[in-house]
Each structure stands twice: as C-alpha cells, then as structure tokens.
Amino acid sequence: MSSTFRPTTRADETLYRPGRWLALSVLVLAVLLVAVDATVLGLATPFLSEDLEPTGNQLLWIGDVYSFVIAGLLVSMGSLGDRIGRKRLLLGGAVAFGAVSVLNAYATSPEMMIAARALLGVAGATLMPSTLALIRNIFHDPKERSLAIGIWGAMASAGAAVGPVVGGFLLEHFWWGSVFLINLPVMAVLVLVGVKLLPESRNAVAGPWDLASVALSLVGMVGVVYAIKEAASHGPSPVAGAAAVIGIAALYGFVRRQLTLPAPLLDMRLFRNRGFSGAVLADLLTILGLSGLVFFLSQFLQLVQGRQPLEAGLAELPAAIGAVATGLVAGTVARRLSVRAVVAGGLAAVGLALAALTFLGQSTGYPMLGAALLVVGAGAGFSFTVTADVILSSVPKEQAGAASAVSETAYELGAALGIALLGSALTGVYSGFATPAGVPAATASAAHESLGGAVEAAARLPHGEAAALLAAAQEAFVDGLRAAAGVGAAVLLATSAAAWFLLRGQKLADGVEH
Image 1 (cartoon, rainbow, N blue to C red):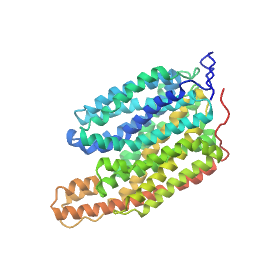
Image 2: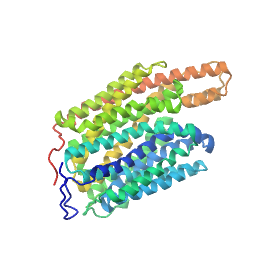
Image 3: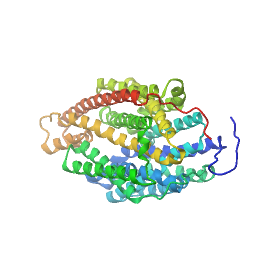
Image 4: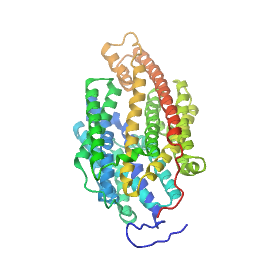
C-alpha cells in the first residue's frame, strides 16, 4: 500500500496518510468510552440509589439526562466541529469528559448527580460526530474507509456490551463512583496521543455558528426524546403531550431556518438523496431493535433468572461479538453483493432473532438467548456499518461533521425509541398481573410499577407472600418481554422491506478520492 505524501496545502490531503491506522485507534478509544458510559450506569443504579437516596423522579433524570443532552446537541456540535476544527473539538471535549467524570464519581446529592450527568452529555456530544468526521477526512480510499468505519462501529457496539461487564466487575470490588473514574486514564491517552497523530480538518467556508439554530435543535430533540420516554414510563399524559408539541414545533422551526440560512448548521438538502435518507432511517431502526432488546434482556437475566451483574454482562457479549465480526467485513460484502442486500438482510436478521424471542420462557436456557444475541449483533453490525458508510459517502468531506451528527442523532433517537416503544409494550402487559392474596395495596402498587419495584417490595413481605408476588411479577415480565420482542420483530422486518426499496441502486464508492 502506497504511503506517498504530497506536502502542499491542507486541502490537498494525502491519499494514504502515514499513521492513519494509529490515528484511528485514538478515535476508537473515544467511541469505546462514550458507548461504555452509556450502559455502565444501569448496573450502578441500585448502589447509587442507596447512597444518594434520590426520589423516583430524580432517579429517572439521573438515568436519562445524559442521553437527552447528547441527542439535543449532536447536530450542533457536529456543525461546530466543521467550523472550528474537528480535532480541536474532539480533544477539548475529551478533557471536559474526563473532568466531569470526576464530578459524577464524587457527587454527594441527587441534584449534583443530575447536573454532572447533563455536563457529561455536553462533553459526550462533542466526541462522537468528531470521530466519524475525522475518519471521513483521514481515509480517502473508500475501501480503507469502509474498514475504518467497520472498526469504529464494532467498537461502538462492543462498548455498549462491555459496559455491563466492566461495571459488574468494578461494582463487585469498588464503590459505584469507580464506573466513572475509568474514563480518566482512557481520556488521558486519547488527548496525549491525539495531539500528535490526529490531523486537523474543518470546512473553510462554513460560515458563522447560528445560535438560534442551536437552541431550536436542542429544544426540539430534548422535547421529542423526553416525550417518548415519559410516555413509555407513565403512559400518555399532558406533560408528555406538551413536550412532544414543543419538541416538534422547535424541530419544524429548525428545518425552516436551515432552508433560509446561507450557511446552515445542517444542509437539509442532504435528505433529498434517497440513499442518505434510507440509511438514516435504517440506522435509527437498527438501534431501536438492538437497544430495546439488550435493555430488557439485562433485567430478565438478573431479576428473572437470578444472575449476578458480572455474569449478566458476560451473557450479553455475543451481541458484541456478532457486531464486531460483521462490522469488519460489511463494506467488502456490500461491494460484492449490494448495499441494499446487506442492510435489508441485516435488519431482517435482527427482526427474525426478535421473533424467536417471542418463545422465551422463565427457564429458557442460555444457548437460545446467546444465539439470539449473536444474530442480533451480526445483523446490526452489517446494517449499522454500511449505513454509516453510505451517510458519510453521500456528502462532501467539508460537511462530514454535520452528516456524522445526523448518523449519531439517529443512533440516540433509535435508542430512546427502542426503550420507549418496546418498553410500552412490555409495561402494558406487565402492569396487568393479578396481585396474590395477602399482599397489601401499597406494596402491590409498587410491585406493578416495575420488576425491580416488585423485587424490592417482596423483600418486605413474609416468605409465602413474597414468593407468590415475585413469581407473579416475573411471569408477567416474561409475558411482556415476549410482547415487546413481537413488536420489535414487526418493526425491524418492515424496515428491512423499506430499506430494500429506499437503497435501490445505492453503491459504496470504489475509486480513490483526490
């Protein structure tokens, strides 16, 4: 492979930049860390609750505010990186991410924890679009870029699955704050090595950063994601409705403003490209199926089958293995077959694996669960990697940050929708279970809120009533999980069919960019 270097202007980039694979390893560190941080808190929640004693509402905000802020700022931060430089934004965000991680680890009140998680979301929003945009500008050979994106996507998937494993290990040996302190050495390596290895890139004619567009994007995305999660947790309500209306109105205003600005934060004309729009939709719905499944299976493994946190985390590793294996070869397979075959096939695989879980039972053995997770991971690896490649390849490299942010926003929105949509199906079935005789009304009410609530409520009852309540709640949860898997399967299989038509004729580039 040639490593010829033509040292002229910044615009005259080298085709095969020396050190590009080492630079990729730095970007992968950032992706891995953000992905781990998104899932590691779940296992720490019981320990954090015992220490900080948050109310139920505060606990929800501790869990959700990180994803709210990331979803709300991704497009703005991707556009900011295009303007001030993606390397500068990435390294500045990495320093902030490390510093705020310390604030999270040593939070002394629920309010402090919520604020710290929100600040961590701000820092996290600077990292993800910058990493993908820098890949677009480092790798000019499309085949190399496909492999680089495959590695990037594989690490994102691996991080989400490794989070529970790392969290389980730390929580069995240290206090809950340790799940945040693991960020520090990784961020230190990222900054020290990134300063030397990462090239700077920006859009030289991007224009000013429009703060009104930033505000509309933030209010719109946070409003929509909050409404989805509120409706999933508590059913339709005036609060969820108001948030949805405000969010949709703000997003409508954002789109209208982008169409009138000479230098918009996000060029809405990108969505006229059928391949770009199809890839974004497939991205969103791939993550919808994957995140919903992994989130609820974590509870099933721990609260129904009685596995310890570390064992439950390890049980979910086949999803990461499948995603890593297929993500690394997805670009090659898409060139040999077609983009639509790989994306539609990957979505169909996830849908069929979810359909298999409609036969799940309390005593289902691990081979079935492991096989389903492996297939889900493999399908998601194929689909997510190729769609990310299509999204990046569809835009000029000057707009790589904004396009990357669209891909990442689809990821965050898909995760929120996955937990909300599948959660609504699960909750609707779960909350209707019959309360065993002898269980006080207040205890029964807490048990009907969630399976975790039922476990806590049962601990305060005599042995006979506790066993009966727990058995009824676990059976209802499994019934709900089967219903959620059925809904997820239907959504993913329908998306597979849509992707087959939307991505018709879409190809990955073969020629080297100059």
